[in-house]
Length: 138
Image (cartoon, rainbow, N blue to C red; front, side, top):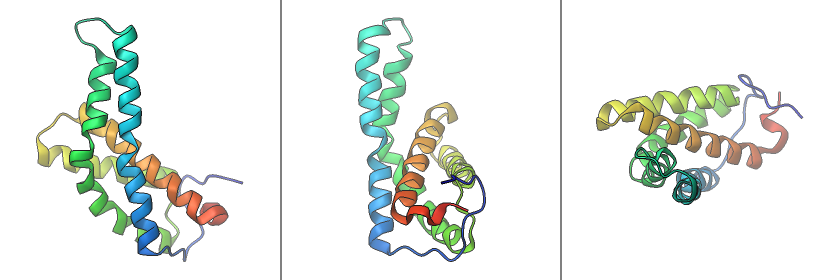
């Protein structure tokens, strides 16, 4: 089974409860990853920067900003599913664009917000892929 980067089968529709489930999982996905990075950072990253811990902290804190990207991203994903443009590269590009917009509006650094946006986007796309089965294959 392929994982298309751009085009998928057009005409896919998911119910709003399933889209909400995918968005909820994606919204929460960065938290365990961030907690893992904080824990690993405490064990191995004792430098003044503590990059693992800082990255982990921002992934955990991303739940405070990521809802705004999901509110815009879920309707976009509905259109992408219907028109056959729901490949993983399209999803990541949309997530990066929405993450960049959230960055501009929040005044945060892109190095802080974009990793979280990409993790959330990947989790959302994987949930949609799981819900639609082979339908997201070309």
